[in-house]
Length: 84
Image (cartoon, rainbow, N blue to C red; front, top):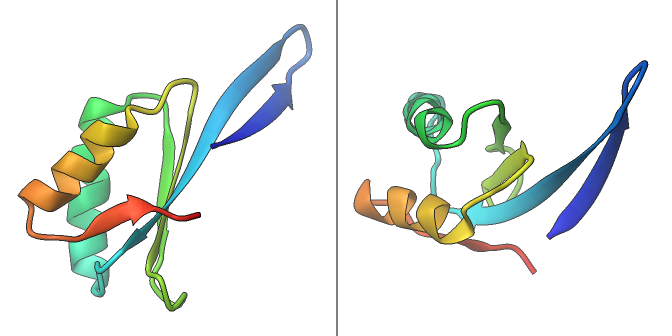
């Protein structure tokens, strides 16, 4: 887990950043997964790097339910693990 601090005009917000290794390969698959994840993690920034050899999923939010992210991908037929 990584921590990111964001400063606005009046407050500092601390966000978590988690990076996952996946076997998602297609943009259409990534788009569908991102849509589902945003339902479970509102106010989050989620993206895939499908050009990376590990097909990286990056999630940035105030609270990231890691096991729920892994379970959601697994339940949709994809492999997912935290990148170490």
